[in-house]
Amino acid sequence: MTYQNITASLSAEDVKEIKAAMATIQAKLPFLVTLSVEERRKLFKMGDKSLAFVNNSLTAAQSNRDILPASFDVEEFVRDYQLATTLTEVLIGLRQLTEQVDDTLLAVGSEAMGSSLTVYDYVKTAAKKTPGLKTLAVQLGERFKAIKNKPAKAASGS
Image (cartoon, rainbow, N blue to C red; front, side, top):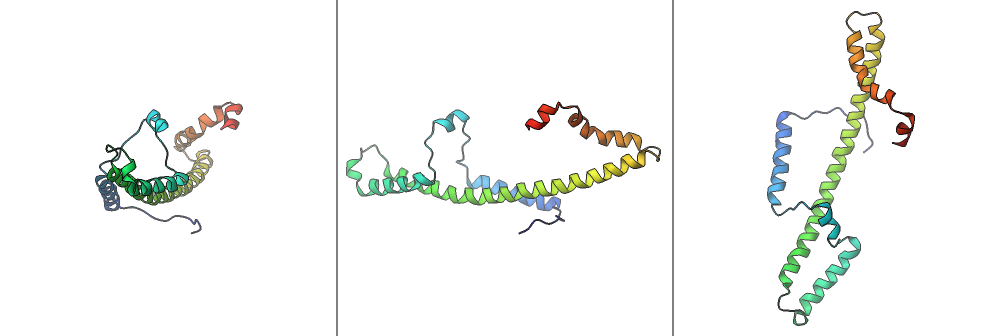
């Protein structure tokens, strides 16, 4: 869908229902963990290239239980693999939704900033002749003060 001006709103009830849906998702995933940077670094990563390896290893484990030590839990391996593939599917959907929300927020935020800049320009112009608008023009101009005071090198480096 091509981006066009966004004209939409969310009611308080809509937001409440969205938050309830997110709470439901979290409740359905009570086993989720939060890893530290160090923990993430140390763990094996199962990406697309590793998926076939893991799948083949699982088949080998199921077909050749006699070569594995008794302490090796094949059923737990099956559960881990199934959960990993299911969570991958869920994650793809969540990432698509997150990307759409992020893109929409960027677009509607840009629209709001564009409108704000138009209002600011009119307020600046009107403040020259309309009593009481100078303070408002200065207040709105605060947004750009930090930008004007940044060194040129820092501005071009970002």
